[in-house]
Image 1 (cartoon, rainbow, N blue to C red):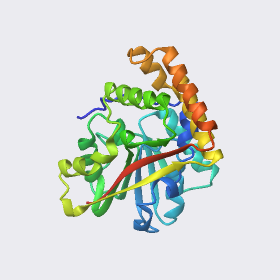
Image 2 (cartoon, helix red, strand yellow):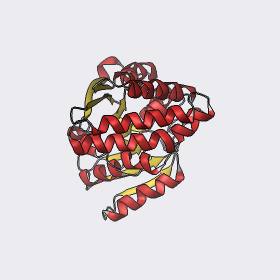
Image 3 (tube, helix red, strand yellow):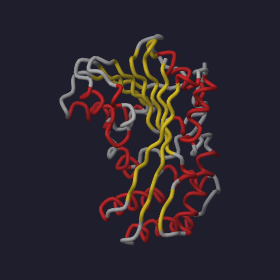
Image 4 (tube, rainbow, N blue to C red):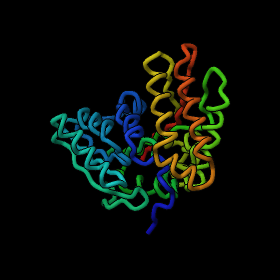
Length: 271
């Protein structure tokens, strides 16, 4: 049985959950929404704090959403999010995307947002997602592509952050530039090219509120999250270097001219 071999480098520090709880179906799964139907049965893999999962459940009032994550504590948080919205068409479980505990041909939609960049075997993960999808159903995946992040103005500190992030992610067994690889992974998993629709979309942080929010959370994550811990323990960076990166994020966020674009690759695969 396949097992997860990659380390989830972010962890679940408050600064990480601050970012994840901002995500919605609209800003993180727009490419999927036109394909949803009221009675669809959805598996949401890597649900995190459950904001996207709950949005999806609201969009399929006659259907059902099963939200799963690898971390038990975060699954509990997703369940609380659903309860706070009064959603009764959801259930929650701990799961490993490499070996899902569901029968084949079970779900109309199998969805994963920012998951494949963190797993040990993304091709096996896609095979499992395909296995549990109904014939004619959809496997939907969206992942960012760190090497394609673009910001203004130039910042050596942010360049150092990106270089460090990619080294720490790969040392943990992940692939931070997953977005550009999604289609190739789907083909390797066995999907025919005609069955794979590959698109892209972006997040942009430029307004004062947006850039300060994003820069503040990465200033915190650079010092206090599992990413920071693994950077130091793996000898990828010193605490002083992390402090400099954190300060660079703060300086960038305070500049009215600052702009950041985060690209994401997306695939819709017909099962």
